[in-house]
Amino acid sequence: MTLQKLPEVVASRLDEQSLQVDLFVSEDIVYFKGHFDSHALLPGVVQLDWVLHFFKLHFCPNFTFLGSDVIKYQQPILPNTHVTLQIEWQPQRSKVVFKYVSLTGTHASGKIKVMVK
Figure 1: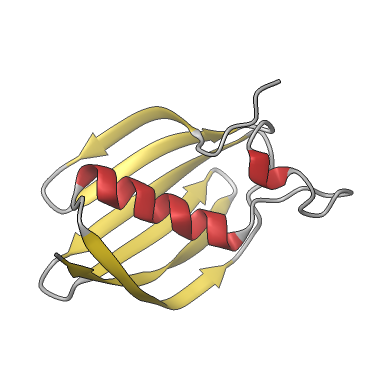
Figure 2: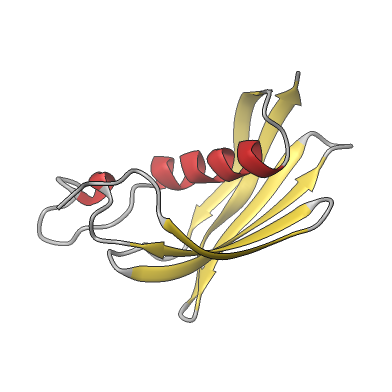
């Protein structure tokens, strides 16, 4: 078994300022190991890291993270879950607005402030 850091991208849709990425979050993600042994869940900091990863990949390769705002974790992302990451890039405000959703509802949402280089 190979432990992975990123989820599998099942599908994606991109336009000028928004991205929707359908993800399969496998039990082989390294961040599940040791994060609550009796009930594994994906840490919130990893969810933020994935938002920044996809933002960098699709919108802006050079930026500085300035902070996060109104981050809400409504329900955990568990191993072997399909989720959709929705990213809206608001360049005029230097904000990355995101939401993780699945058939069970919203998992997490928030805003990230960046400075584009």
